[in-house]
Length: 90
Image (spheres, rainbow, N blue to C red):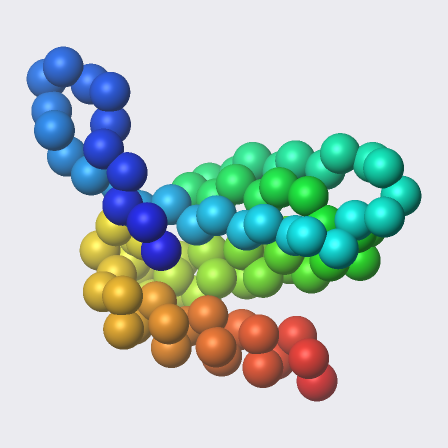
């Protein structure tokens, strides 16, 4: 998880953002998905779909906890991410 500074002149707050990069693309398609607090780039069709599902489910889990990504510690984010990935693999 990376915390990026905003460009706002009124605030120097940082915002958390998930970045997914897929490196297994062999079909030549360029894939880019942007969503609430995430950006996904590249990958095969299958890899990109898994990254999309993962990012969406992380956000859903955060919403159920009543938290934003900004309010989540790196350790808590890791735990949420690993839980989501484990569930997707089943």
